[in-house]
Image 1 (cartoon, protein in one colour):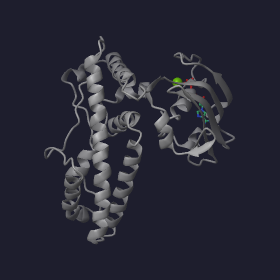
Image 2: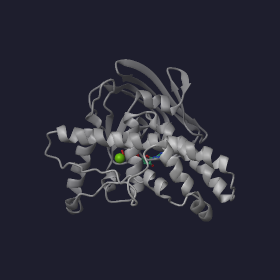
Image 3: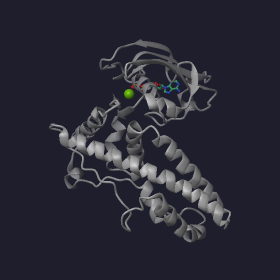
Length: 306
Ligand SMILES: Nc1ncnc2c1ncn2[C@@H]1O[C@H](COP(=O)(O)OP(=O)(O)O)[C@@H](O)[C@H]1O
Ligand SMILES: [Mg+2]
């Protein structure tokens, strides 16, 4: 079980100072439009790595007009252990995290909490671009594998550096090799986490007895065939795409890259015909399965619905 027993919002969005005491039971917040309900959910979503359910910057979350920064404090129970979590941002800086009084990384927080959310904007998840689905999928993968965040960051970092070399038309083979090796190492780990997460969800859906529509999910491979799935093969694929990338001045959607980043959902034929309500039900079922999955030594994720 993962739950907050107290939550304090200070200068966060519309809340100047808000204290909530609660327990492990589900909570329904009600109030007039604009009274700050979603702001509270957003605050809760920040108790896991990432930008939270609105994907807003720390600066946008600062209460206006003061704009001095914000602080969230929560007493979190996870796997029977209590943690004091403090999240804060000053003068628009990225948020900092403290766990039990000590400065910690967001990844460390991800080791304690797993949070998923379902908000109305996500009704469009299956009909809009692959980018949104990938982000959503990575959040699910992260909820299973906290190291997913580090692998993604390290992939992005190596890719950015490689892009910089490409842009500057650098041809130093060693330099590229080192970066491509790093991309391949993290790339393979990213793929494995995504695939394992997919398998968890797939199996949970099969095991579930529900009237809700089920999601048929497929990890799309490259149009040119299956992805290289070893570090050696992936490094080789990056290396062989280098000449083309050099001509383009950046990583030009090479087969391996494009596919690593391209997770998509094979749309179920009748899915197009689902109306809005059915789509919500579909998403709800999907998320509740994600949240419910229980594995040895791991807790299910908690689900925020907004
Ligand atoms: N940074 C901010 N500073 C002050 N108020 C904010 C900030 N961001 C949003 N708000 C206010 O929060 C309110 C919306 O709160 P929200 O939680 O979305 O409401 P609801 O209860 O309808 O979910 C709006 O009145 C908006 O002006
Ligand atoms: Mg709202």
